Length: 373
Ligand code: 13P
Ligand code: 13P
Ligand code: MG
Ligand code: MG
Ligand code: MG
Ligand code: MG
Image 1: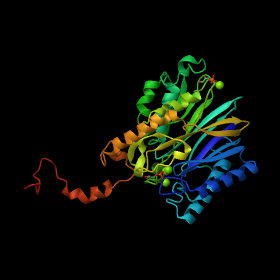
Image 2: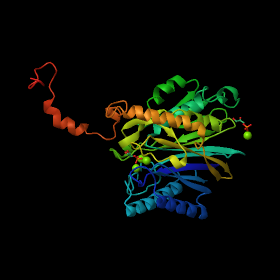
Image 3: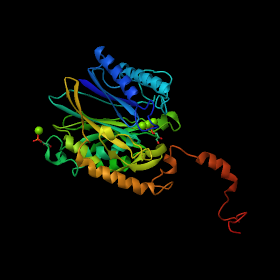
Image 4: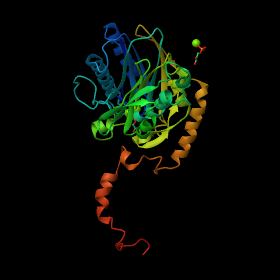
C-alpha cells in the first residue's frame, strides 16, 4: 500500500493574496528533497495555486501519519519564517496553532490523503484551488462519480455500473454519513447542494472496493472562530480502469460554476480552470482558480505533473468565468454576489447590531422622525 498525501497551507502571499513568492517555493522544494533523501518520502512535488503551497507526497505511513504531518508542519513553519522576513502578506496565515500535536487535524493546513494498492498503471489527478471552500468539490465529484451525462463509464463500463459510495461530512455538527449512489443519489443531492455545510470527504468504488477520491475538508473559520482567509481546498482523484477516465474527471470543470470565497472570503464567483502559470487570482482577488496536476504513479514515484487545464478546450470555461465575473461584480454589495449574512466571513453586522439597536422600532408603532417629514 502507498499513500498519496497533499498537504497545503497559505503561509504568506505575494502580492497580497495572489501568489506564492518564488523563495517560499524554493524553500518548500528544499525540504521535500531532504525528506526524499532521508527516506521519509518515496517522492514529492511542490506546487501552488494562488497564494497556497501544496506539498504532494507519496509514502508508506498511511493517512494522518504523525511523521508526514509534522514534516509538512515544519516545512510551513520554515516558509512562514521566510515570509515574515520578506514582509509577505498574511505570513503564517493558515497556521492556527502554536504547537504540533500528533497530526494536522484542526491546526489550519488542509490535507487530502488516499491510501491504495498501486495498480500496474496508476493515473492520478491532483486538483488545487484558491479563493474557495471545500464544498467547491461537491459539484464536480457528483458529476464525475454519479452523473452519467458527465461520465459515460457509469453507463458503459462494467466496473463502474454499480456506482460509488460517497462519504459526506456535516461541518457544522461534526458528523458523517455514507451515501450509496445511485440508490441514494437524490437524498445526497439534498445535502451536498448546500456546500458551505455539507462536504464530500471521499468516494469509494463499490465494484473495486477501493478509494477513488479524497478532499481536504477543513473550514478555517470553524477552527479559528473568526475569518483567517479562505480554505482553498485540494482534491485527489484516481482515474481509469473502473474509475472515471482522466477526461471524465476533468470534464466538470468545463463549466465555470459559481463557488463561495472570492474577495475577503465573502463573495460568490465563477470557478476558473487554469494552467499553473495562470493560477494568480488578481481581479477582485479572483475569480477563484483551480489547477489540475496529472501524475502517473509507478512504484510510488510521481511521474509528472502534466498541467491538465493547459488545454485550449478549457478556453470556453475561462471565457465563461470572465463573463460571469462581469455579471456578478455588477451586483456590488448585493447578494447573490455577496454571500448570505450567515456565511459572510467578514462582517460589520455585530457592531451594527449594537450601534443601531436603539434606532430599530416595531413597524406597527409611529416612527419618531419619519424620513421626509
Ligand atoms: P486511447 O485509444 O487514446 O487510449 O483512448 C482510450 C479511451 O477510452 C479514452 O477515453
Ligand atoms: P486567501 O485565503 O487565499 O488568503 O484569500 C483571502 C482573501 O480574503 C482574499 O480576498
Ligand atoms: Mg492569503
Ligand atoms: Mg489562498
Ligand atoms: Mg486561504
Ligand atoms: Mg491510450
